[in-house]
Amino acid sequence: MSKPTVAIVGRPNVGKSTIFNRIVGERVSIVEDIPGVTRDRIYSSADWLTHEFNIIDTGGIDLRDEPFLEQIRQQAEIAMDEADVIIFLVNGRDGVTVQDEQVAKILFRAKKPVILAVNKIDNPDMKPMIYDFYTLGMGEPYPISGSHGLGLGDLLDEVAKNFPTEDEGEYPDDVIKFSLIGRPNVGKSSLVNSFLGEERVIVSEVAGTTRDAVDTQYEYEDQPYVIIDTAGMRKKGKVYESTEKYSVLRALRAIERSDVVLVILNAEEGIQEQDKKIAGYAHEAGKAIIIVVNKWDAIEKDEKTMNVFTRKIREHFLFLDYAPIMFVSAISGKRVHSILETINKVNENHSRRIQSSILNEVIADAVAMNPAPSDKGQRLRLYYVTQVAVQPPTFVVFVNEPELMHFSYVRFLQNRIRESFDFEGTPLRLITRART
Ligand code: GDP
Ligand code: GDP
Image 1 (tube, protein in one colour):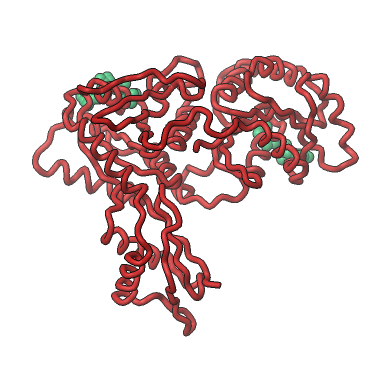
Image 2 (cartoon, rainbow, N blue to C red; image 1 turned 60 degrees about the vertical axis):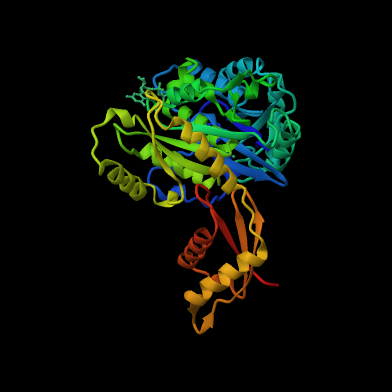
C-alpha cells in the first residue's frame, strides 16, 4: 500500500522546516552516517497515531535565482504534483501578508485538500491572532507553534482525515513494481525503452488516477510489471524538474512505491556520492535492490575489468552487500532481458518466508559455532527466532537481555541466515526483544 504524501508550503521564515522537523521527529537513519545526507533534509517518512505518511518541506527545494513569486509558485506546484494533502503555513505574528495572499491564490487551483496552519502561536493568549487568516479563504485556520510543539496533534488529525482512501490507484498483488534510480544520463530512459522493445511485451496505458499516470505497465512471459515514475525519467520540462533536490525527492517517492529498485550506474563515470545516498535510501526503505552498471559497451575492458568494477562497487556500497550486480548495455540490448529475470528472483526473495522450526535450527547452529556475546558476567541467551514480516524479511529474536546484543552479532546472525536461505537482493531486518 503506498503511503500518502503531505507537503508544507508557505513563504520563507514562517517555520516550514521547524514544523517539518517536529513532525518527522527523531528518526534513526543509516543513511545519515553518510556525510552530507542529513543536512537540509526535505523528505521523510513520518507517522501520526496509526497513520504513516511521507512529508515534503517544499521550502527546502533550492530554486535559487528566481524571484519570490516564481519560487513560491514552483513550490506550490511541486506540492500540487506530489502531495495528497497540502499544509499551507503562515506566520501568526505577521498577520496576513501580500505574499500569503499570493500563495493562497496559487493554492486555490489545487485539486488537493489544503489545510491552513497558523504558526508561532506560542501560547493560548495568542489564539485570537488566527482570526485574521479566515480572509485567505482557506477554511478554518489551525493555530500551532513549531518551536513549542503546540497544536500539531489537531493539525495532523485534520491532515489525516483528508488522506485518500485505501486502494486508490494501486496495483494487484502479483504485479512487480520496480523503479530505475540514478543520476541524469546514466541511461534510465534508454533501459526502459530497451525493456519495452523486448518481444512479447505488451504495453498498456494506465487508466485512472493522475497519481499513477506516470507509471508504465507491461507484461513479459506472463509476469505483469509496473515501471514506477517513468515520466520522471522522460523529463516533462517543468522548470523545477531540473533542480537536484527535486530529482532526489522524485527518486525517493519512486523508491517508496517500488518492490524492487534498480540502482543504475554509468560504467563510464563510475560511482558518485549521489548514487550512494539514493541507494542508501532504498536500503533503509527495505526494498529489494539490484545494482545495474549500464554503458558496459562504452568502456575498454579485459578479463579483469568486471572484477575490478565489482570490487569498487562493494567498497562504496558496503551496506548493499546483498545486492546482485549486473553489467548491461541499453544501446546494444546486451543482458537487458536478464535484468527482468533478476527482478523476478529478488522479488521472490523479498517475500520469502522461512518456517520457524528450520530458522531456529539455523540459529542454534550459529550460536554453537560462535557463542553469543557476554558483558559483566552475563551472557546473551537466544531463546527463539521467528519471521514476523516479508518485504523485507523481518525476524524477531527473543533473548534474555536485548542490551547484550551487539551490532556485530546481529550481522553474524544475518549472514548465517543468508548462507542458509536465498535472500539475495533483499535487505533483512533483525529485531531483538526481551522474552517476557
Ligand atoms: P521556513 O523558512 O519557513 O522553513 O522557516 P524556519 O523553520 O526556518 O523558521 C524561521 C524562524 O522562525 C526560525 O528562526 C524559527 O526558529 C522561528 N520559528 C519557527 N516556528 C516558530 C514558532 O512556533 N514560534 C516562534 N516564536 N518562532 C518560530
Ligand atoms: P537518463 O537521463 O538516465 O534517462 O539517460 P538516457 O537514457 O537519456 O541516456 C543518456 C545518454 O546515454 C544518451 O545519449 C544515451 O544514448 C546514452 N546511453 C544510454 N545507454 C547507453 C549504453 O548502454 N551505452 C552507451 N554507449 N550509451 C548509452
